[in-house]
Each structure stands twice: as C-alpha cells, then as structure tokens.
Length: 420
Image (cartoon, helix red, strand yellow):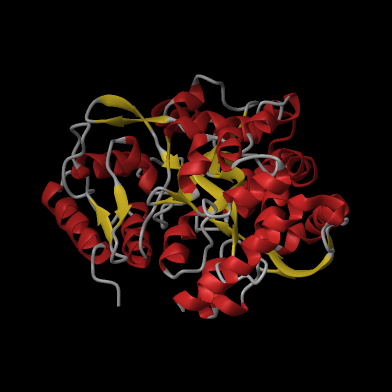
C-alpha cells in the first residue's frame, strides 16, 4: 500500500511541479473525478468549468463530477479508497478516520506545487480561513484538507414578534416567554451532537484516541468546577418545562412549519423553514445561557466545518490539489454563499456585508465563539443518543443524584468501549 501511495504522489506532484514551465511545457492529458453533495452539483460544475478555463493552457482536462454527501463520504471512501474520487468533500469530524486509513493526501507535501501554480502557499490558505476550520483540517500537525465552509453548527432561531432579545438571552426567560405566548421551544436531545452543547458549555470535553476510542469526562467534574450530575440537573430543568419540546433528529423544520414553536435550536439548513414560519418576526442569535449550580453558563455547541480533500491514491495528486484549492478559494466560497447560503470559512467572505446581513450566518458566527470541534469515535453516538432521550423523556429525576450518576457512568462506559 505504501509503495503505491508514494508512486501516485510522486507522479502527481511532479506533474504539478512541471506546470510552472508555462506555454513551452507539453500540454498534459489530465483525468480527475470529483464528489460533492447532490444539491451542489450544478454549482460545482460551474466551478469545474472555470477551473478548466483557468488552467486550460497547461492540460486537456477530463473531469467527472459525481454525487456523494459530505455526511456519508467517509463510509463510501473507506469501502475502497483507490476507487474513490480524486477530490471529495466531507464533514470535518471524518478527517481523523480518513487520515488513519491513509485516504487523504498531505497538503504539506504538495505545498510547492500549490505555490507554483495557484500563486499562494499553504500558509496563505491557512491565514485566509478562520482558525477553527484550519484546526479541523489538520491532524497531528499536518494539514490534510482545504476548508470549504464554516456553517455546520447550530444556534437559535426565534420569532421576534413573540420573543424579545432579552427573552432569548437565557433558557429561563426564553421558556417563560414562550409559555406566556402559548408557544414552545424545540431542540433535539437524542443526539450526541446537540446534547453535548450543555456539557461543552460547562467545560467538559470529548476526544478521539489513537485506537479509535473516545475520551469523555462527563461523569466527573469539569475544569470549570461543575459536575456532570449538575449539568444533567440543569438539562432536566429545561426539558421538564411545559414549553419545551423535544424534537426527533432531523424533524426541526417540520416542527417549525407546524406553527407551534416560537424558537428552535438548529442550523442554517432550517433557515428557510424558519423564515417562512416566522415571517417578519424571523430572527436568529447565539444559544441561550442556562442555569447551572445557581450560575448562568453559556451553552456551547459543536463547531462543524466542511472540507475538501485529495485522495492519497490519486494518479494526478498535484492537479487534484489545485482543483481542491480552486473549489475552496475566496471567489468560490463567495459563490457558495450567493447561490446556496453556505457559510464561508474564508475570512474575507465572512466579513462581507452580504454575509453579515444574513441573520442565520451572523448567528452562527456569534455562537462560534463558544463552539468546540468535536472529534469522537464510532461508539460515541448510540450511548449519547440514548442518554439524551432519557433526559428528554423525563426518565431521570433531578432529585435523584445517584440515579443520574449511574446513568452518566453507563453512558460513558458505552462511549469508551473498545472499537470492534
């Protein structure tokens, strides 16, 4: 496997390095495949066309575009890495597994080729994107992907005709105002992506170990001095309120459309549903604070990013890196926002007036200060989902500290179990 990888890298990198010779260089025949989300196909084809125009004097391109969701990219790629696309988009939490499987090409090794052609260094690319996205694209000190977007996180949508800015500042005032209006506030708890937000806000952590297991400290005491039991008691205080609605994962948009909600925790993918339901009252902001051991603590969140990587087995690794860079550059991140309202990781685009005036993206940016890049193993998801559902369904009592501790210990034992 290693010999094949080196051969592919050498051939691709040398081809890319030769590009700097200009018009006198021999025009190459270059074949590449690209995978992206179904809803992005038309946009991606436009970007590929512009790439071919940019570099057409150096190569005769044959670039095939295929459909693969960022959320399922890792599973498909790891089924057969060599058969996967040369360039593919994926969610940032998949990067460690892709690196460990040898599926991603190190961008550090292709930095000379990128500089020679694109006229920018890897440091330039890092500096052009928000630090969290660069961190998410880096593993063990090496950068393995180009940041594409910074909108894979959650915040609070709300109806400003029902709720004031003061109301949405804390869960206590939010639920009280919703009750007074005869409305509800929706959030998904049966997911370790969402329910982790309370623990992250309290200073608890998760991490991915080298053997694929997850480190998690939620059943102990955080660096901020709070106990996991106290966090669960806070969550039970929220879920036990008559105006709180526990929503199944993926069903927030339907619940918003029902007209029963005046606020909901979700992400940019539900912006359209919220705009339609709340009308002129449509608003968005960071997540509320919650009462924890008598104090107000800011609810955390997961800071998720979308990335584009290069297959380590690409026969044209240099050209693949240039295409991946092109698809994620400032101009194309601006196009992503214009056409699909995808939140940019590029700093210049994120600071543009168009982006700052977008309520959902602005709220996400506000919440990002409290976001955590979540790196976890496969055994994290089922136990945390089950645990969150127990809280949502009131199967735990805030007065039963021993019962809460037992439930936390059981959840942690499941999460930290060896990966089979």
